[in-house]
Length: 619
Image (tube, rainbow, N blue to C red; front, side):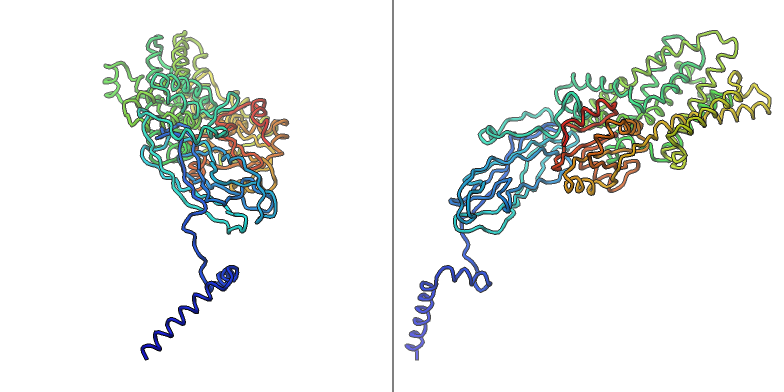
């Protein structure tokens, strides 16, 4: 029995070997296709991929190069990008990271080879292929390690067969270091032959990101940091959000008690220090909550008290009552220089909130730079320098507005000035309150008839308002008449100011980012993303630019997307992270192939002529 068992075993083994040797390889393949046998696996990987950087470590705000290196097994290749007709191209899928902006992916030049399995000549990569792109690390990026998950999709072929498309997952890791750390170039041999496109934050003289300007300047050293921060503050003082502060500044320093030029200057500096305090507090709030700088203007909990202060100041200018510091505190303040300094400082804090919407892009870059230095001392002086730059206009206005109070007070002309200032301040308060109370904004229109009615309200209001007298000096009945006149004048001015900022172009707008980008790709059209908010004066000014006939004609060939940032939401937060938005306005363009044109990014109001120059070359 034992001998028979051994014989059967040997016979079965011999039969299996004969079948293995005798059955054609093609039949084994067919059996494998039916799942009856598992195909053989080659211990050698057909394609490998890994990522490399052009530097050993990265600083916030810097631009560097990245590359994906593909290596192929002998006699294997992958379809190029672009691929031959009907073939699947090699493609790198970039990760979505809040602190990084990627430039255009540049694929290597293909070799056109005769491939039998593909039936002719096709563009392919073989042996080794390097895919490169520029990368910018945002100023707000924290120090530490960043790991990026990449994907590479390809289809490998040889002369006999083509495999199914495959995706390789791999990570690229690098360190983010402070500005004081040295940066050394790496992988020179790989990057020497790469012709990469413009970096994501490329700056141009015709259209440039304000935050990008700051980012480059701030990275060059402390002297340039302070110089550019101061200059940026001066430029910010000429933005639309700051215009309403001019009558407030004049009224605070020009319609009070008669003071000398030196005291007016010191009061103005104190006023600007109040602005600096507001920016410091708002900066911390923005950094901790991730809100867009300026969204505070749409929060009724903030704007109602602020506008209440302005209403009170306006009524005081009209002579309804006197705003006075309590007697005990006034005596104390007088002993150290006068109660006027406390009032100027308080009004400066209010002015900082009002001007916040136009300071976002510039101030956001300053705050990001401060975060990377991790220096509270440096942060304090940079923010103070920025506020002094922005406040230079107010220092000049405040210093020389004091000359008004130094003029003789005889006659009613001084009361006329005070009444005008009072009406202007109340109008400013109502103007900003509309962003927190939507029904106030819904009343506004941009039409000739609407402005005619506004003009009539102002004329009737001035006629009834007794602007040459103060409320407290009038009999009761005349006070009522004056109140009606002031109310009509305020309503008329509010209709003028608000109506001018509600201009709407008759462009067709899409309110969804994903839908707009998909429409652009499907129809082969460029795309404009306009990020706006009701509280953003410069955003409203851009509506006038869009309404220009030449601009409107150009934009009619675009897919136009308008995205509302008035109040924070999950979608706003996603878009803010995706596009690196710290303040408004922001306008971003994509070409007809869906590529973001980072050198065309707009972060300020521009006239139609400049906007047309920005649109040139986008197709």
